Amino acid sequence: MLPRRFLPSLPSLLALEALDRLGTASAAGVELNLTQSAVSHQLTTLEAQLGVVLLRRERGRLTLTPAAQDFVAEARAALHRIAQASLTLRANPTGGTLSLAILPAFGMRWLAPRLAGFAKAHPEVTVNLSTRLKPFDFATAPFDAAIHYGREDWQGAAYLKLMDEEILAAASPAFTAQTPDEVLTLPLLQLESRAGDWHRWFAHHGRPGLRPPAMLFDQFATMQQAAVHGLGAALLPLFLIEDDLAAGRLQPLCGPAIPAAGSYYLVWPKDRPQRAPLASFIAWLRDKP
Image (cartoon, rainbow, N blue to C red; front, side):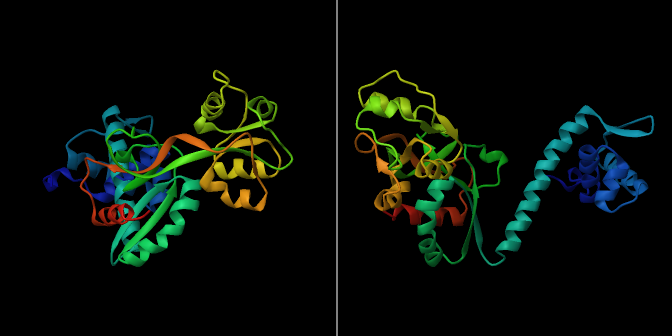
């Protein structure tokens, strides 16, 4: 721990953060339930504690110095982590909490059905799930681990492969196509985060170099429903559409599924001490088919 003299009082820190965010001491006072003079007192106290001038007083307004703006950005992140830790503690006061960032389709169809087994094996762990569509920086995000689609290319992370993926060209029964040229005549649907999928699919079927235009979607679930309702042909993970294929809501186009460009991984920061809930989750996943 740093010496206590380097730790400013929390009320003063909250006053500085609110002033920076809201622009005036009066607005900060309204948010903090303080008078304007009480906010000014807290700011003066903070300057005295740190021994640094933080504020410029110009024409009756308070503005932060450039150094203070840098300081408050770091302090805001720390305050957010403290608030998140408090929320985690309140959510599970008797045990550990595991915060996972998940991909929505994979989380719904692969992970969610398995979580009851983990909860039974580890009742002391509360699992919190949040959706993230793209990789992020673990240093600035409140997650212990994440589900990642791609290759082992998340910088600074350790990996556990969960599943390879196969993708299938499929459409509603309103469309039929037996050859790549026939597929090319259909309206195509595409996930925006996988812009190369149709290019790879056509290359796999002997038509390299094609990058046909397609309607873009940000999530598989939306694109899946669009395909079911006859909007066009989509490349969809086989594990996601098994029920639709069995029920006849979707049908394959031009051959079987092909290997996807990536796989699904659990990733976690390798330079951070591994907490017990995460270690339990990793060990449990290693034993799952």
